[in-house]
Length: 279
Image (cartoon, rainbow, N blue to C red):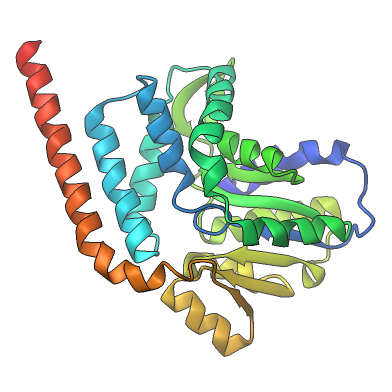
C-alpha cells in the first residue's frame, strides 16, 4: 500500500494543471518496453556509470538483466527487484538536483531515440481528446517525470526514493511501484482527481501489470509477453505490437546477444581485476 500511496502523493502537483475537457477519463502507460524499448532504469544506470556513480561490476550485472529483458521480453521479478533496488541504493549521498540534471542529459543521449513512435501516438490521441495521461512505472519517479515531461504528458507515478534535506538516503519510500502497487497508485489518484476508471485506459507489455490493466474499462497490450498476449486475446483487449520485423531475427540473435552479455561481463571482470592489481 505504501508504494502506491507514495506514488499517488508525488503526482499531486498535477492538480495545478488546468482541468482537461474530458476530466473523468485518463490513460495510464507503463514505461519499459511499452513506451520505451528496453528498461529505462538500465539506460539511467549506464549513464550514471559513465559519470562515475558506481562500479563496472555493478553495470555488468545490470547489462545481463537488460539483455535478458530485451531477448525474452518478460520481466523477471527477481531481476526487477535487484536491478531497481540497487539502482536506488547507488544514488545514496547524491542530491535530488544532481540526479534531475543528469537525468535530463541521459534522456537525450540514451532514451529519446528508444521511444516507440506507435505508443507515443496513442498517448497523443488521449491528450487530443482532452484526457490526462500518466506514466506508471517501477522506475524512479525522477526519471519517469523527465520522460513524461519530454513527451508532453500530464505526469508520472514511479518508485519513490527517500531523501532528507535534498540528499538521497539509498532507501525506498514503501516498495517498488510494481505489479499490484501500480493498481493501488492509480486507484488513489483516481479518487483524488475524480476519474471514472470505467472510462480510463491502461497500456502495458507485461503480465505483471494485469492488476492495472484489469481495473480500467479500456485495457491495451503493447508489445505483450506471451501470458499477457493470451490474456488479452481471451478477453478481447486491444493488442499493438511494434516489434514487427525484429521478431523473426530474435531467435537467431538470442545466442549472440547472450554471448555478448557474458563476454561483456567477463571483460568487465578482467578490467576490475586488472585495476585492483594496479591499485
